[in-house]
Length: 146
Image 1 (cartoon, rainbow, N blue to C red):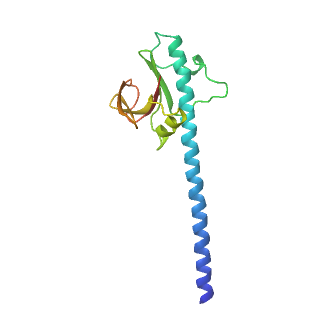
Image 2 (cartoon, rainbow, N blue to C red):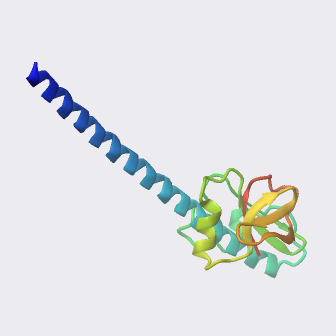
């Protein structure tokens, strides 16, 4: 009987360690994905901003081949952008938790990054900052404008 209890304890301990390692790998994978999306949105935002600056009358979406994107850049699915009234807005419509914070960290605390809410930009640190976002930016989207 004692050998069975010992076996059960060992099996339970091993299963616990396997679960813990799997959970750590999953958390690490989610962190990498958030960082990847954040970098992707910011690179896209910069290229879109350069285009908007060079083409003052531009409005709406811009094809990737018209943007000065780096040759290594591949737009992550869900990363979108629009130009409205001379401003460029790059956004991710269904942001994973932590995306806005990661984008802010990568930019050194930019106030030009936040979440779209009822047609305005809300930043984590300042709340409403008086920036209207275009109607094509969905509610809840992570937004970087310039």
